[in-house]
Image 1: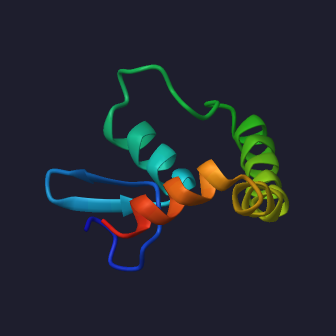
Image 2: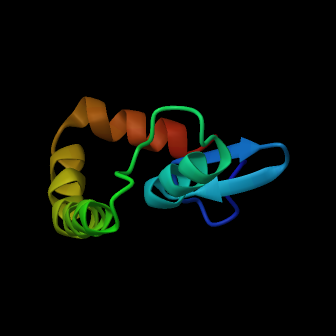
Length: 84
């Protein structure tokens, strides 16, 4: 179990566990500066990306849950992976 609080996604990089897609993206940008960036370098553009990402994360989450619960195959898979 990588995440003590059950939050996904989560990565383990050199013993450091990072959970939540936003934190993972920030971590990857900071840790691997020579690779293509996930966030724009321009502070204004980065702020807009983070604003839209946060909006989508918070606003669309319940639609995803609704669709997952109402799709029997998706619900079975969610239950299967949550019992790992």
